[in-house]
Length: 250
Ligand code: HEM
Image (cartoon, rainbow, N blue to C red; front, side):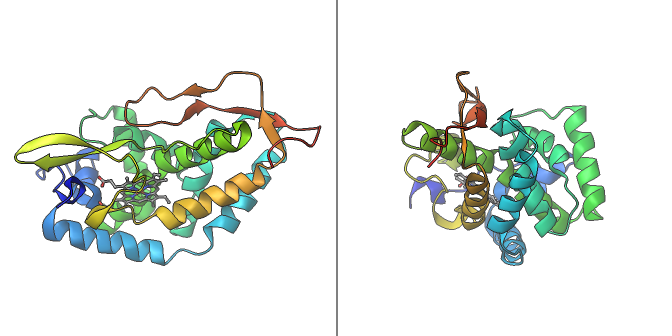
């Protein structure tokens, strides 16, 4: 058994309904055994139901950049577009502004603030009820949020600099021999085994659409800054400008 096949550290199940703790207790990501199998199947069936994300991401990104000359790709595009497109494909309004704070509070080592709890409350209202289906839809958006922004930011940075693209998510947690440990994802950007990312195809489609719409932009002279989280490797700010010379992104 590889370490990625080990169970995830369990999260508390006696939690206030509709809270961030409830979201953790209700999604595949932090479940084990039959709960994991059932919740993962639900997430996979939702993902199977969505249409062409590449085209939707391309169109949405083109619409945003049409009015922009110089901008931060992470703030304007890489964070909001994938979540907005996926939300629409899952039958929800554009809830990207509420997904970001929930994503920042999602992992069990974080103590959620009031802003994150309130944002989750609005997401549940958009989903109609605090049930396992709502948790699955919200879970997909939250899982997509940072990781897909990282895939886009790293992909764009690599194509504009000629450096190799780095993987955005560096490690994950498992319970092995009674101890909670960090397991490296080096070489497996989408994980492996029974918990491997079910959204990899969707993430690649979203990134491809966004990156196509960003052809014709180049990095500004302002140096790229990187997020400070030890588990994420992705730009925090990535400023680009329209390339009037025509020699920018190939
Ligand atoms: C549309 C975008 C995405 C969606 C909907 C999505 C969804 C999910 C879901 C539901 C899980 C939990 C699976 C389970 O526990 O059985 C998961 C796990 C995972 N995702 Fe994604 N994901 C997306 C993008 C990404 C990206 C861009 C990356 C990194 C390049 C990534 C890396 C991972 C990894 C490494 C895991 C496994 C974590 C572990 O084994 O502990 N995901 N994803």
